[in-house]
Image (cartoon, rainbow, N blue to C red; front, top):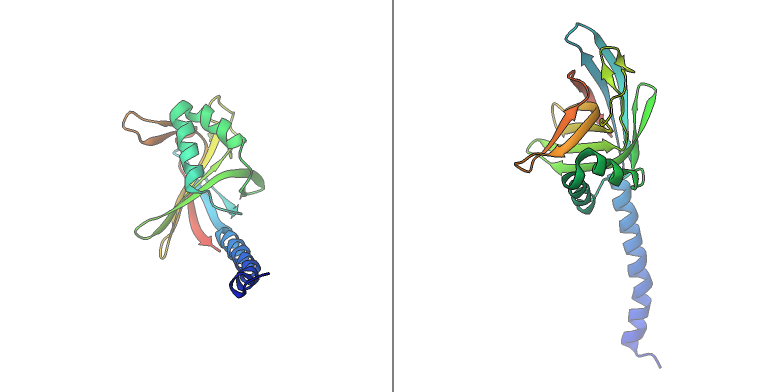
Length: 191
């Protein structure tokens, strides 16, 4: 025979489970985000180029995802990071013009003015060189990197279309970009 206390507990259990499922689905939806911007390239040779950018993120990477990626970078630089990212599910994509790249890592951390998003693709976004996008590929430049600071006033960002990554002797993560030309992100809007 069920006691009144046990009967009440059995009634509450489904309600609590439904509430937790609702909260989990809301939290997942809250991390979905779309960022639009314009990629702007000004080469030292005087060439100017722009392209529309849409970054669609289904979910953000967790602290555990961050720790795993950092461990891979420390273990073996670009090769190990790429190997790790290739085992991860896609969590979004980046469209630059008509070219799409799959996002494997998107981490957001607070800054004094807003937040900084680090977005990594498991393959190069584009090889940008003297012939702009479409320059010849080089061995070892296997990852794409996007940094976006979303701030209340002036948001800004940059794209390393193809990059190498490693940890320096001081323990800092550093990149070696394929191109010496900086691709800036301007007119950034986060939705």
